[in-house]
Image 1 (cartoon, rainbow, N blue to C red):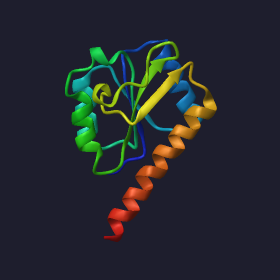
Image 2: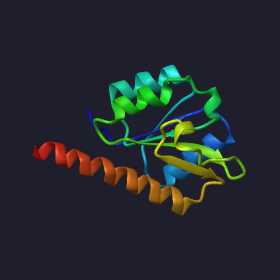
Image 3: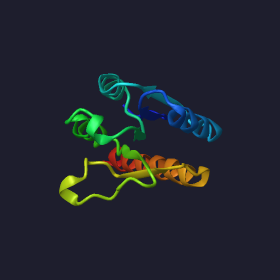
Image 4: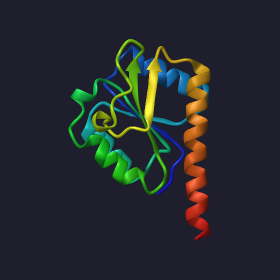
Length: 133
């Protein structure tokens, strides 16, 4: 059920390629899907420890984050949205699409490294707690 990879949802673009390159430098395994159906199918087979959603949330199917959240709750997957620095990112609680946070472009390597480490630690801690019970 638990796997050692990061999942990115977004149409191929320079942003996705740059993100893949940065994650590659961190020696992270990365799976990329260009549509929500692929994302849900991939996540239902093996859950990643980090999901990065690219694009505007209005483009995501209405229940995408909810579906990912239900699957991810079991293993502590972190879900973040990739956003532009000039876009309003922190929304009122009732408007939040259900993500754990936002990854702001342009992406800094240190910030991405910290996010990856935090997501990995979150999953590892939850996995250890589940295994002890």
